[in-house]
Amino acid sequence: MQIEASKKLFNVDDYYRMAEVGILGPEDRVELIDGEVIQMSPIGTRHAGCVIRATRLFNLAFKGRAVVSTRNPLRLNNYTEPEPDVVLLKYRDDDYSNKRMLPDDALLVVEVADTTLKYDRDVKLPQYAAAGVPEVWIMDLKENRLLVYRDPEKSAFQTNLILKSGESVFVKACPELTFAIDELLG
Image (cartoon, rainbow, N blue to C red; front, side, top):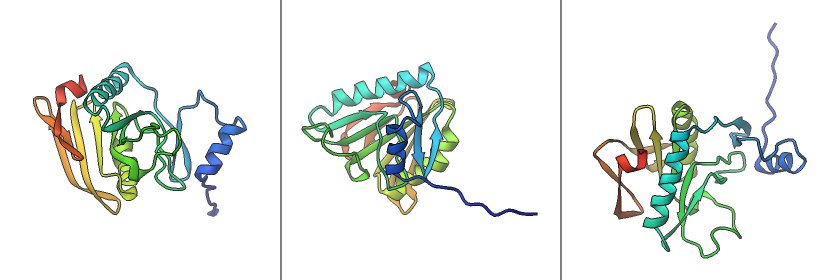
């Protein structure tokens, strides 16, 4: 006997209400993806170091030109609000304290993957492309490489690069600033 059942998908407002009433607490490492509350993986020391390093490098390089956001929500649509490791945003004097961060604000999203490469690449990356995020970097810590995705169209990126030790990368929005892969990955 086969039983048909449907999932109850949560929108962003439901998600925030769950936090307000205590269903989700500040200690919960979760994000909303396609209407589902997804538990995020624990952060290892190399992962944390890469986030801190990228944040430091970006803050120095983009001072007064962009805002660097670390592990904050980026609302992609009414059912998806991931918390990327780092987002480089268009500059605002108020540092986004008076506005939600949306895909149109993003110049670059960075995800650090030590145990989550398949999830970041197969689930989150299409979401970023569909929302129009112009560029996504995935730091693949297991293979010690940087996966660069640019030029979103529908739910895919048209440009895909794999960069390794000894190479460098630039953010498409600011091509005059380059970053060594070795420095980003540590």
